[in-house]
Amino acid sequence: MTMQDLMFYFFAALTLLFGVLVVVNPFSRNPITSAMFLVLTIASMAGLFVLLHAFFLAAVQVLVYAGAVIVLFLFVIMLLDVKEEERRKLKLAGLITGVAAVAAVLGIFLKVFSLGRTGLAANAAAAPLEGGTAPLGKLLFTEYLLPFEILSVLLLVAMVGVILLSKKDLR
Amino acid sequence: MQVGLQHYLVVSALLFCLGLLGVIARRNLLIIYMSLELMLNAANLAFVAVSRFNGNLDGQVMVFFIITVAAAEVAVGLALIVALYRKRQTAYVEDLTTMKL
Image (tube, rainbow over all chains, first blue to last red; front, side, top):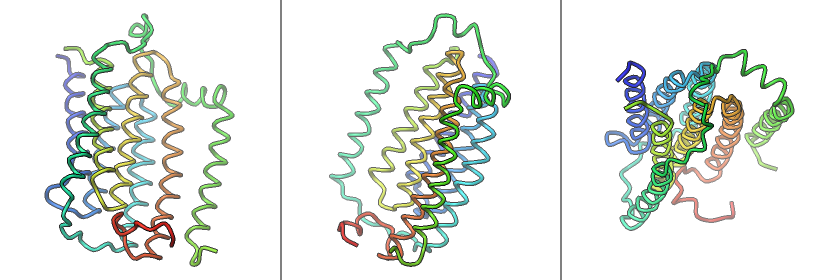
């Protein structure tokens, strides 16, 4: 087993562990704890991106998600001042059906993967590529120029929408 | 065993199902929203893995777009949650069962 494989198992285990702690934390129901574990999940996922040679995306993941999105979450959590969640009784029937549904989805995923038809090109492994800033940027500004521009308009629309939504009265 | 595409896809699927479970089982709107982010990230991981093992950068460009759209989506969604909280003083889905504000 090479060093890279070991690193994969390390980061994958960390990602899944922190992901579990985001969704079902046995120690705390506080949304802040979940947000903090979401930061850790995203950071360990950036490690997986580095292992996949997607260096630019790893940096963007840390900057945008851990840096901006989570800060937004924390702002809103503090703004809302949500009280410590008292242990509300979960409806057992609802929980069981939910877990069963998720297990069914997971079963479908794993069944598909076990078929082994991943649609890979035959020579794919022979041509490993680097996802650095330069090749990605070149692709972004040539082949994907139109989606890129549309995305900037989308960000503008989202910004205007947020300002409108957060006004005092929604009229 | 050599780590290949399948390993990454299994991690991605597990993470996706974790997020789905959070969306279904949790009641706090903010945590449901975080679970949604988890699902988006799982999709990102699958995109990057397939892109890497296919020798093709298109998947990584798609992840770039997804991250940007997710940031916009978080901003709008959180603004909606704040507006809803102002009207109803609650962030739990079981208290938000009527359509009319």
